[in-house]
Amino acid sequence: MNRRLKNYLSVGIFAFFGGGLRAYLNLIWSQTGTLTANIIGCFLLAFFTYFFVEYREGRDWLVTGLSTGFVGSFTTFSSFNLDTLKQLESGMNSQATIYFFSSIFIGFLFAYLGMLVGKRTGRKLAEKA
Image 1 (cartoon, one colour):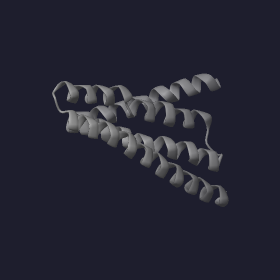
Image 2 (tube, rainbow, N blue to C red):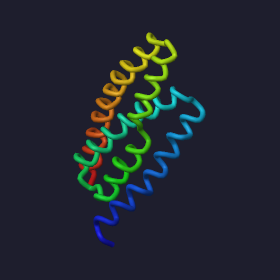
Image 3 (cartoon, one colour):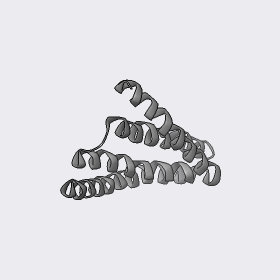
Image 4 (cartoon, rainbow, N blue to C red):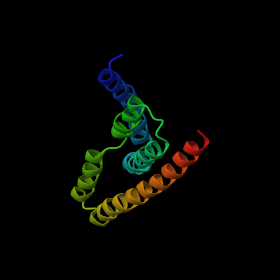
């Protein structure tokens, strides 16, 4: 199968699952679902990126599918901004400010943790290979 086609199919298939999981989180937790998805997504994207850099055994289609497909459809910058705007519009300025800055700070923290875990896990697997 053509490499480019394999990447496109991988993105589509993984996006189906990432988007479905995010929709489920939003259904059960509303704004907390968006925050949860974005924080988990920060960790996962950093983990996948650094894991495959260290391990070097990843297939292009798998890396693209997991990062662009799954994580890209699982996280949502637009919903994050819309949630913040809705809070501001409802007069919940303090809550909107806390939501906005905690999302950024916690997201960065989880991306950093994902980087550390991804590097460590990738190195361990590379040493065993």
